[in-house]
Length: 107
Image (cartoon, rainbow, N blue to C red; front, side, top):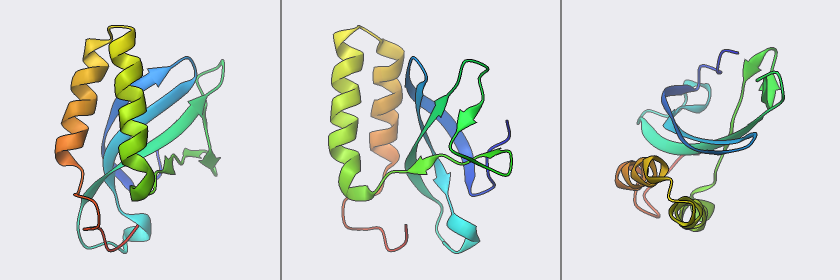
């Protein structure tokens, strides 16, 4: 399934069963002038089809900047708990790329 065009440079950061967390540059309807890294969420069914989707295109949920820090702490903890060091490294990379709290104008 192809992802909606608002997401570019997408990387899977974390997954658990059917739940997937991605990072990438998100530009809603090409209205944002800056390419800012965001976190997104989606789910896969047994056939590997992602939800939510729109007209056959995967449309991940964009996490609000106020939710990101706590969410990253949670998945970092889960990754360390099960010794998933690839996910730990992915999460650390995302933390370095995310805008600092309060610097985002558009979501």
